[in-house]
Amino acid sequence: MKLANITLVFASVLACGLIACGNDENPTITSTKTTLTASLNGASEKPSSTSSAATGTFTGVVDESTRVLSYTVTYTGPFTSSLTAGHLHRITNTTALTGGVEIPFTSLVSPIII
Image (cartoon, rainbow, N blue to C red; front, side):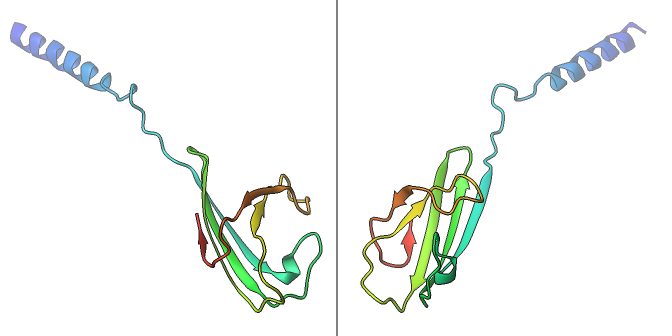
């Protein structure tokens, strides 16, 4: 009878010990990523649309845990003049027409990949 009681107590202690062995000190951190997409065309230009026939796409991913934006911009002409600048604006709300330039492109060769 004593052996059965000792076995039961040992099994209970072992079960409690295994339950307490969670990985609380090293929790798994999952990254939250937000995908961004945009079609680039003259009609969508802000604050004033244009009749430009040039088109393009923007595809980006924001990693919320690292606060890093990765993106690809592609575009094709025809262009009425030489390209002189390209950039991303910071838009703070959905009703804003444009915000300030936040990320200037160092190269204007399509695709622009960062």
